[in-house]
Length: 527
Image 1 (cartoon, one colour):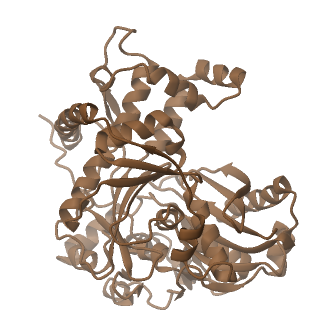
Image 2 (spheres, one colour; image 1 turned 180 degrees about the vertical axis):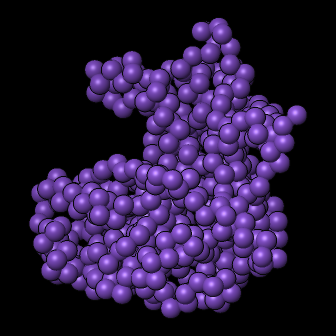
Image 3 (cartoon, helix red, strand yellow; image 1 turned 135 degrees about the vertical axis):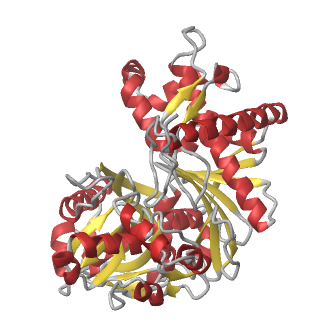
């Protein structure tokens, strides 16, 4: 049997996943990683290229070991990664600096761009679908202003998934779906827009070739083969952004199809034609898809999965012990208890991620509102359920914004990622959105999407669309409960009002935002 490898570099971890050519997952090896703040550099999240490559190598080696395979058994390898995270290289092709996706160090640079170039963000957004919030231009300006010697060495730039492929093949390149999230990109042309860099004084000769997802790049180098155990006969294939490849891995490859990816962050995506101009209010992000001719309107819910990890680790030691004794996942134990909690979680309102406001993107201070001192009402089960409900409510709000912009009706949602393993969470999503929820058998769709791109590159599949038709198999469906849907609509309105008040506390300087995009100004007025 022949095999394909996907390397998935997410916000919280990296993993190598091996599939056979029929889409069956054979093995996975994963390592969590942490992006550390640089001392003296506020809101920085540096991507450690040396340490993180070691973790990536470990994952490749152990995925092969777990599967009982040799490197020569892998026909092709591709990679996917968190979007927005960038790596820069010197003229020898060595990575010299990198930042993770939500690195927000370039606050001053964002403000400078907005103040010195009136209307620049709106103009660039109309072409790229991106604001400066997570874009590469402000970060490159930060590097130019704060590390000028390092900036002078910069000869090329790519995304983090591209960096993995460069380490394997020796070739630096990007694809539209990942490179598009730099904001230095044209949605319609699906290539770099170097004029943007030129306008703000950034080098214009650092942008590598753009290859469509599924394009063969070359073979594993001798050095990479020695490090990883992969064969020099293994083909390295261009991958893409995690959300877009995840969508392909869910079969979401046609105009109008919808998916929610429930990972560390939650993304709500709707396929639209690449000729569609982004909305003027800049409320929603628009990215190139991995499918030629398509873009994706996207809402993002910050930290949904990471908040669950925090809740688990901060409060659920007893549930961890119970899960260990029973041989099940701790989240399964928590869902069992949360299932007994009524719709609305006794009125508890979690304040973590806001709905999408791409033009002025910031969050309130993390908190729970409406807690009770009655332990029968307010406990771990009710708080856990409230977090599940909240992720679904914010997703529903984002989808409503996309519907308003695209004039599309949404009746069916494909749901995948770690969150889709929870039966309760899936039903809550159906009840909140009022849509049928479809769960694929391969819930880790991002890795499957990367494996599909590897298969296209090596000729196993004719195209990403054809591979989706061949490989995506459905496991379950969840039908919305109309009575619960009515209740959640009321809760959603209440939550939106409360969240506005919580943002006002941040504006007044009384509480601290959970996350704030670079360059965002708040009133900061104390009564």
